[in-house]
Length: 245
Image (cartoon, rainbow, N blue to C red; front, side, top):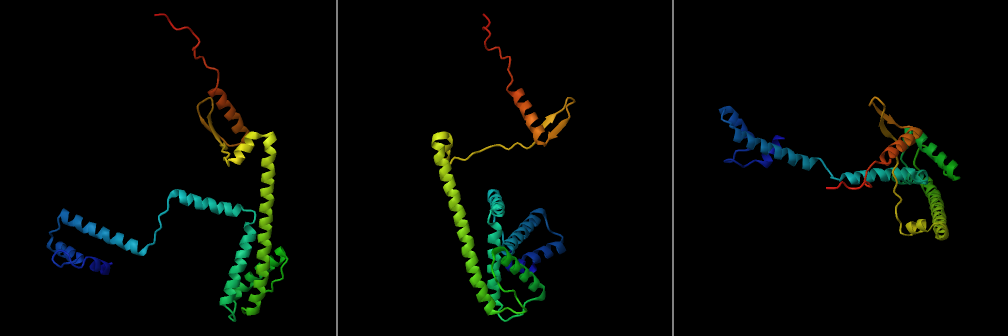
């Protein structure tokens, strides 16, 4: 810290740096409020400068962080998430084997790698050889062949399912022309269907105590009661004749 202070404030106040000025003021017992405020502003600037230089910080809006979190959830809920995860892990293992050719494999990793290979062979009907004590170039070449075949299989499967979903959506939209024109127009214009999910409701008992309902039947019952109360028949007296002046 002292080096940073001297580097940043090496020449100010008649060639006296920050530390020298502060020590001199303390020894002479002459520091006043403006002097100390100036010193603290310089120290604050030093800390801010150090933070910016040493702590990387990428400012992101709250909406962006929420979007990233939602994307993670969507990826995990994707129907082919596990398959894509397996193929990516196999690719990482192949890339690592290329770098580590003829090197020994850590004992603690041999079992983990072979369990993963057995899982791939059983799940996708492949015949990838298990690893021994060393990384072997022949194993890498053989596994690359199986990787390409597996990658091609998964891509074809995803494309076929996507085409099936597209055809189903087109047929459903076309069938709505004669049966449900509103649905057809909304689908054609890509209008989002927005709805409110009510999974809890707050109410009060006869004594005024607060009650929180979370069960489905209780929520439905209390919601109906709230709407009945809100849209009940009112004595507005709008139909009554106006008083004569």
